[in-house]
Image 1 (spheres, helix red, strand yellow):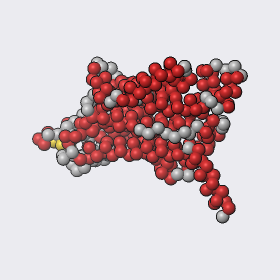
Image 2 (cartoon, rainbow, N blue to C red):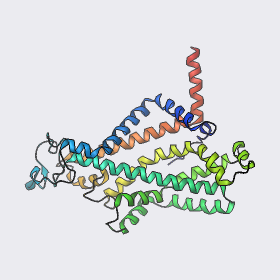
Image 3 (cartoon, rainbow, N blue to C red):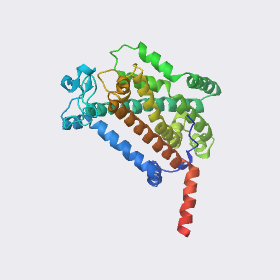
Image 4 (tube, rainbow, N blue to C red):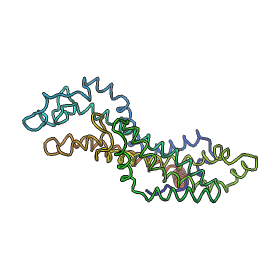
Amino acid sequence: MTAPTDTSAPVAGIPATGAARQLLRRLRGRPAAVVSAGVLLLLVLLALAAPLFAALEGQDPYAYHDDLVDSARGGVPYGSFGGVSADHWLGVEPGTGRDLFARLLHGARVSLLVAVGATAVQVLIGVLVGLAAGLGSRWADGILSRITDVLVALPMLVLAIALTAVVPRDFPRPLLLILVIGLLGWAGTSRIVRAQTLTLKSLDFVAASRLAGSGRWRTARRELLPALAAPVITYAAISVPTNMVVEAALSFLGVGVTPPTPSWGQMLSTAQTWFRADPAYVLLPAGLLFVTVLAFTVLGDAVRTALDPREASRLRVGTRKETSR
C-alpha cells in the first residue's frame, strides 16, 4: 500500500477543532465521500442494533429451523430466494435453517469490530515505534527501522494463518484476530510516522519547544502528535478495509471466526458449497463485504485528499475563481 503524502501542514498550526471543521467542510463538497460516509454510518448503526433488529424480525441468529430446509435435497431451503418469507426477511441458511438476516447483522458486528480493533492496535504500535525511531539516536533508529523492514517483507497472511492455527480453539477468536492482524500490520504506520517525525523535528515550532526546556517525549506529545494526526488518520482510514478483507480471508480459510459465531468471512466459507443451490446465501455476505470495503476505501481516499495541503491550495484557487465570476 502506498504511503499517504505529507499532510501535516494543514494541521500543524491549527487547533484541533478548526482542523476538524476544515476537514468536514472539504468532505461535504465531495458527493462520493458523503455517500460513503452515509453507507458506513448505516452499516455501523445496523451492526450496533443487531439484537434489536433481530428481535424486531422475531428471530435468533443461533436458532436452528430444520423444518425450513429440505433434507432430501441436502438441506436446501424451502421456497424461493433461499426461503424468503414474512418471518425470514432474507431467507434462511442452507443446512441449518438459521435466519440469514439476523446472522448478517451479527456478522457485521464481528467483522467491523475486528477491522477497527486491529487498526487501533496498528496505529498505537506504529505511532510509538515511529516516534521512537524518529526521535531516538541513530542506533535506535537503525534497529527499529530494520525490524520494520523485516515485518513489511514477511507474508502477513501466511503468518496470520500460522499464528491463529496454533492458538487453542477456546481462545476468543475475534480478540485473537484483532491481536494477530494488529501485531503484524503496524509497519506501514511506523514508516509514515518516522518519516514525518524526521521532517517535523527540524521545524521552528519543534525547535522552540526544545529550547524552552521540553524533553523529547513532552515535545512529541505536545507538538508532534497534533501535526501527525492528519497522515495517521488517513492511513488508518485506508487500513480498516484492508483489515476487514484479511479477517474475511482468515475466516474463509477456517482459522478465523468459528461457528456458531457469525462473520461475513465465515459465512462465505460455509456458503461456497451452496452457490448453485442457493446463490443468495453467497451473494448477500459477499455483496455486503464489497460495499463496506468500497465505502471505506472511497472515504479514506477522500480524507487523504482533503488533508493534502496541495488540495487545499487548489480549493482556495477554485473558490477565488468562482467568486470573481
